[in-house]
Length: 202
Image 1 (cartoon, rainbow, N blue to C red):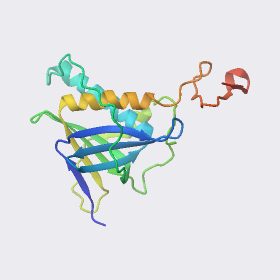
Image 2: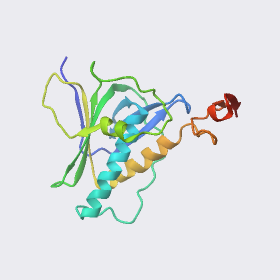
Image 3: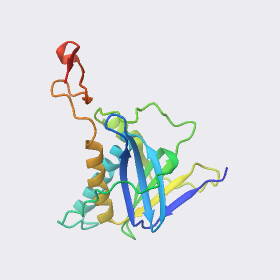
Image 4: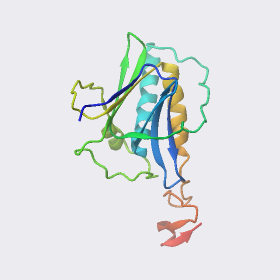
């Protein structure tokens, strides 16, 4: 099957969002230009890693003087995902790059293949460790393989990338609150807490 490549350079809107209730959320990246909307699903660990790495990239570029983010915070985008929400593919790999000539961030999401792992729970509320972050975001490798996995490619200004990071961090943190005793995710009805010797905590 021929590879599909969805390119937004730049998009009118590029956001992370979810559907479902905390504890049972599905995460999406969504790009829109005019009436053209492409949505891809991914794991929470992937979207958290993307926001963390992108925020770090912007900070490092700002520290080196390669770009000026400015003191003004980006406008908050709190709108829900655009409808209809049709999944183009499930993300297996994410790549992140910087085009210094155009001063654009490049984010590339590749479709999951048979070799990609699906072992991470969709809404695993545990903290994302550095190994998971390193595994989820690779160095930028743009493939020209016509038979490769489908790809969503988004080119962002620094300001748009900063806005994406801010919203994504809010989305990730909007899951289940942690138990005040053990720190594990707390379901609406409570959970069995190891710090209480298996007693139920509400």
